[in-house]
Length: 472
Ligand SMILES: *[C@@H]1O[C@H](CO)[C@@H](O)[C@H](O)[C@H]1NC(C)=O
Ligand SMILES: *[C@@H]1O[C@H](CO)[C@@H](O)[C@H](O)[C@H]1NC(C)=O
Image (cartoon, rainbow, N blue to C red; front, side, top):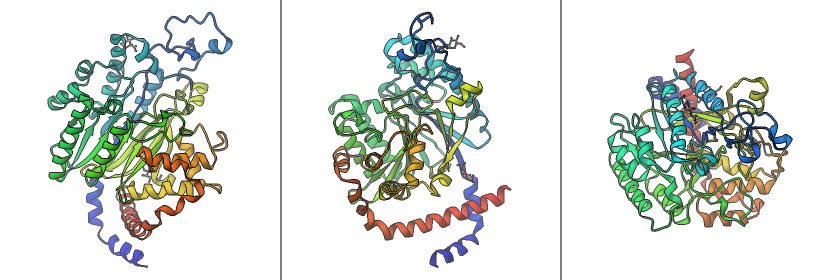
């Protein structure tokens, strides 16, 4: 009842929502393009498709099978695929797109291992040129991936139209930067997550931590808000099975702990964290020491379809809807390309895969809402869990579903642990707990949660209603 009353009184103040409407903007998040410059229809798919010397005259039948123009699930991205993605983004150019987050791994895995640096740079240059043409009036924020050339000076020069002098200085030094935005509250901090793999006492890594602490302190003092943006996310791979090998771990433990500490210290100003690297569609929730959800991270799927050890994915791209001033994230729309269909039809039809609010029935991306969503993954896992099924389908960009990969309760539980336990020790403990014993841990939050959900519901209902009126 109280909820209804609040709703009615809020509806009368429609002036406020018009202001909010004017602050709505969009930004793209693109990641893990993994351009394979040597890809052609006679490429050897067993060799990662990159071999320039393969003339198509030998090998097994599988090798000779001509590949489609938009690529193959065993291969990194063709130029045609990347171009089709750019073309699709062009079509939403009028929608108040404010900027683009581009979180690394521009090159194919094989290019960084086998090609000379000047060839690597040529490929990065070509992708950069394409993005420059696609986003002629927007800022692109590039972040370094581990499959990018090590030549930071050359990359800096290549990206100089996006990186002003101050940003260029720290980028060339350590691969991280901020571009201070004078008139808006939201500041974007781009991290070099390659440094999170370094030894505890690594000099460059230490400098980045000190720099990050300093800039966040300053933003906090100024009453500004922050996005943390990078290639590799903290925590663990949600698709990793079992604890036996350390490959599920993203950062070194020392850096993982420092990252967690940093987010806990500045969570009040961090309004979003954005990463790529895993090629999967998933998210993370970060908690305070006392268990309260205080921050979230979104992991966007890749443009390359290439099979990782966890299987392939369809190419994906994402656009976020947000408050241009404060950075508050409202929603996102996930686009994808059905690669098999695209090759079959000889035509790349990028379409909406889903949008967050309608798909999950959540009207605001908040730590609490994402915490509740993750909780459902295990609470209902023994039944035919529709929320987890939905998430799981999106996780591979519509390639897998639970039946096709035998994703049982343990599998659901593994996703849950990676999403809610960034700390490695806690993650390990979480994996050991039987799925059934788990669901009670969050009930102390219930009262607080209900209040907030009610408020969040009212605000977004109101927002949606009046936006539609303004629009239609
Ligand atoms: C890069 O673009 C140039 C100019 O269009 C082209 O000649 C070259 O083949 C491209 N290289 C790669 C590796 O894509
Ligand atoms: C998500 O879909 C709903 C319903 O189609 C639409 O009203 C909303 O604007 C969409 N969100 C985004 C971010 O496009």
